[in-house]
Amino acid sequence: MEYFQQSPLQTKIYKLFLQKIPMEKTLVLIKPDAMVKKLAGNVISELYNAGLKMIGLKLVNVKRELAEQHYNEHKGKPFFEKLIQHITGELHGNENVIAIAYEGEDAIQKIRTAAGKTHPEEAEYSTIRGKYGRHVSSTDCFENVIHASDSPKSGEREIYLWFDEDELI
Ligand code: CDP
Ligand code: MG
Image (tube, rainbow, N blue to C red; front, side, top):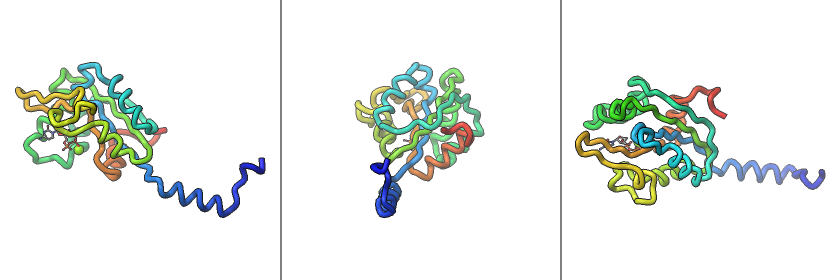
């Protein structure tokens, strides 16, 4: 048993080490275009490779109010209305969204890298958006498969917008 005991100095060093690890939370939404194509399983498999801890997951029928709050920063932009129609499922037969909360070291960057660039035609083929996304010219919709938080601050904000505290592990 003594073997596992740490000296006060060791404990202090360990705590300092833990503080240096940037533990972040990030929100992923599997968008209606991916849901309608039955891609949820593939997307979740790809995201496992990021090595993060899944701390929440649920199926959501997205209402306009939640969509507008989520995409608040894009209000007033030319693509805003289409974006709301997309995430609420209006463009895809009222499809639902899967919301997933992840936590881990450097979580934001890891998921953004796995997602790829916003425009599916610009995304690397190896990324989720590059592999499964498309730009629909008739509706000018970026069917880009997933949403991924873009900073630790938005990760926190978005997770608590989509999840109640008691829904998170
Ligand atoms: O999703 P991401 O953070 O990569 O991109 P964003 O710039 O925050 O834009 C949010 C979403 O708006 C994108 O994922 C697209 O679905 C949509 N969008 C669009 O339809 N047309 C654009 N020119 C830009 C964004
Ligand atoms: Mg964004």
